[in-house]
Image (tube, rainbow, N blue to C red):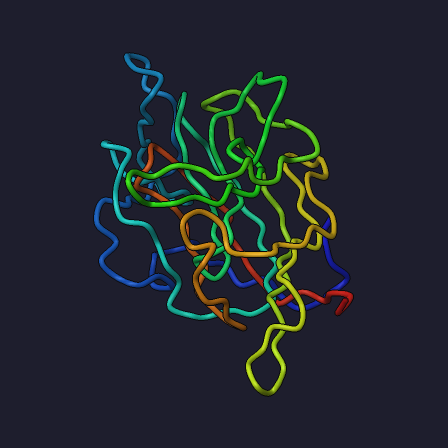
Length: 228
């Protein structure tokens, strides 16, 4: 079932090609399916065909940024990780829902799968300054299994003078069918962008430079939100 009451059609982003994303796409490859490398569970191996995409045999390549900029956005996707891998979905390229291998962890925080990523400082070396926002539950499946993420993002609101009058918000997010965030305000962007300017619209980013990740059935649409 969709997360919002909107009847607008979904817009697939990776159905046939990567035309929705800025170039270069580097080592992203279309495949029929993926699975764990039997010789190394920290890698994914692509299988011939179409319908899924992965970030190449090295498991590290260019992040993807959509050409289109979005305000409020509803997203639905399936993903697969190798053991210990790390990726993320960033609304406006600024607000990250973490995707990583957190299978079996009893205590989770914003660094774990489904978490809202911590704020960080880039210097003297990259380090977190808080724990982010943990998902309500750890619904992470084992490496090598397809998993689902559904989320409704509401963009920050600004008045006519450009002053922010409402924070960005994850209205609702589900991970493998379980609610992980609900009406969660995002006071700032995440990671080392937390001090940076916020905007009414921005691209969707898919992180691909931190480890093997595969995606399929990636689709977006403008949601109906409560406006609060």
